[in-house]
Image (cartoon, rainbow, N blue to C red; front, side, top):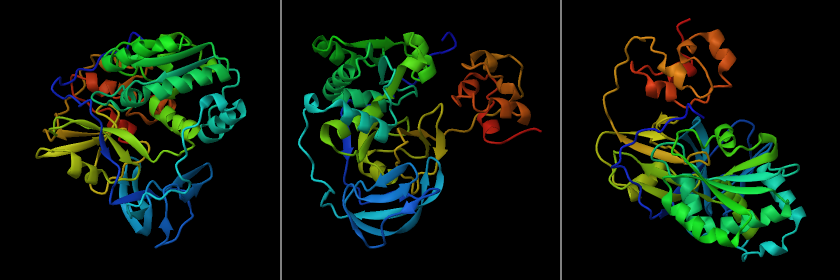
Amino acid sequence: MQKLIEIEVNPNILVSSNVLNFDKPEKIYIPIKENANILIHNNERVSIGTSIIEYPNDIVNSTISGKVSSIKKVNTIDGIYDAIEIINDYKEKTIVEASTKRSLNKIKKETFDSILLSNFKLDFKDKKNLVLNCIDDEPYVLSESFYLFLYYEGFLELLDKISKVYKLDKIIIAVKTINSENINKLMSNLGMYPNITIEVEPNLYLIGKEQFLLRHLNLEENETIIIKASKFYNIYNLIKRNRLVTNKLITITGDGIINPSVIKVKIGTEANEVISNLIETKDEVIYIANGLMQGNNININNFVITEDINSILIMKNREIQKEYKCINCGACSSICPVNINPLLLNKKNYKKKIIDKCLKCGLCSYICPANINFNKYLKGDSNE
């Protein structure tokens, strides 16, 4: 824990506390990945919840109602894929009509077991603790904390029920010190839930990673389940409302825009459509998906917001800092939270040994006074 540090940020980049909505895109795109079994045909009419693609362990559903149009190339965080294009008819038809809210008190343990295991691969057998992780580690990203901000009442109700169903010893909500609004909301409501506690974590980078959060909370991994707030939102909707989630929260921020915001978007929406309708951009910007530290520069054209996108940073296009020769100061190896020597990442044999251990957190490049980008070695660049 002593190696975790606070990342310096631009205090002028402030995200509004008002969440914007973009729930009526013109089209959505569903990438076709390996082992995909396409379940629909061209020109077929689909509803919200229609199964579009089946994978060995997953089914991808449509997030809008409309007509299947064609196959097009799209950019995603994982690369370029063919994708099924669905044109919105704006009728919001669903496979199953939206159900009324169910009383959690009437839901039996067997139902919890079935939903949590089959849909979310969560098994509470032999578990003593549950941690709701509402921490965003990346600078400027607030997506996880906003799930708690918007849905804290439902979250508390469900956490309380899970605690009783599985007879858990501890239910903990983990937030960072900088999330004062969430802390105040929780403190005002936790009196009704004596079995739930809040743990306020320091504003240190990577403290939201499971291995570091467990250590800081002094909990054993084999006794604890940690659930991110974004995933818990999906669980809440399926258990409480019997409804699959079709949207997600993403943070769109950076010094290249005028109005940094958290936005609720339909999964499969093109990022450009969201940005052109809701965000005021400046000239000469670059786009980074999923954070400054761990994210990747992206081509925003035809870039699709998939379930694993939590943010898009729009930054002023500055000149790339010149790399200098290593001065052997040792700062990179000293700061590495998993004790890797980044200087050896350009050696194939060493990289092969530690590649699964490396967190790809970017701290080595962040701290380097010579501006060495160690990430290039992780991507395959080598001196050997």
